Length: 494
Image (cartoon, rainbow, N blue to C red; front, top):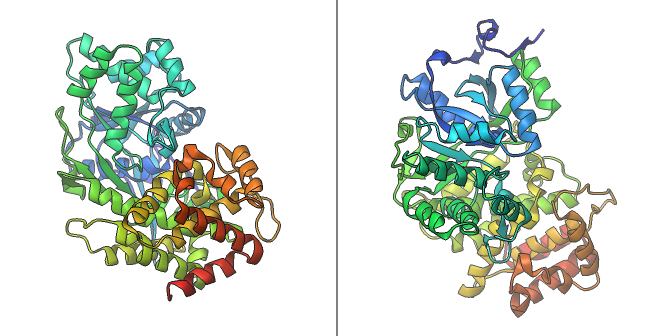
């Protein structure tokens, strides 16, 4: 019989489960976090939990909140278990469960005034967020903030009186603190974006600029938005994981998190309002995060995209199963060696070949249960961040691009909405209807796919890429995914 997770039940959990050794009633909050999904609870919250466990910085607990309906559901479930989360780290040889307690309260989405009260509380010194790569209102083609997005326009028209976006809440909180004579909090993005601090600053100031340029300038000049690189493979939780937790550890947790053992967090040390002593639990503080994040986004996230659509078209369900497929594993290795890693500048104290081997080992972890469908999700936001920048650099450098063009062609073929066996692919992108329409046109006229200039920009005008993409897509339709990958492997001698 599994024990329902709660503060009162911690003493009933078995010896195989680690629980907080600190008194949670002694914690006080200094961080408001927007978006308390799986990644946040497997990453930032775990680092803080470990810090508290060492007896350090217990005045840096988390108050959670959000802006979406799913955030409200998450908050209700977490409140019912006293904001505790079971984090299960899994490697091929072992699994380990720890109940974490760094979050001590949650403010429901939609309760604007309650959220703003937390933001203007003098104890709040950091506002952090994980709202996914697609949550920053970025124009895909320009890779810049889109002030014309309806959500942004609505917050601006309301004068930030009742903001509904994360950036509207942050802006309103900062301006209210200024009016009250309080110093600004630091805004820390924990999302997987290049220059995530700059991107967040652009979103906040871009919104405020629609209302009052002087206020926008004040935020730009007075608020810190440190850049950071975050990394931990954290799949979505399903009933499968909940059952594993009940069977293996005797815990009934509505919102457990299963993740790999590996984790990394690299941060710029720009926290004028103070910060927790995170270097004591493995966070790297550096002057420039850019080399680390470029390495991660191009090799890990680009690598995920490389295997995702091929595996999806071949009806492969899990990421580790894709890595067990010798052809897909060879494709990943060849693409990284030939086209991706040459476009990654040197990274301090890091051997890129070793990093690549670590990535391949992490992808092959059979315990994680990471799904190919998750990797295929939201390609219209992810391709312009994880694949196309590498492609553009390779084109400028005169380097090889056929593998990257093949990745883009496989994405197009996936968006047709049908695997090679004839199985329907359920919608897997906010723009799925449009992508499916373009993919069906591209079956006969491949250039139609590249004509989505909000995604590809001027790449349609680059003859070398256009020809490589069109040839790859035609081969996929004529000969199939495996034959197309074989052609690429032969061409680069792999």
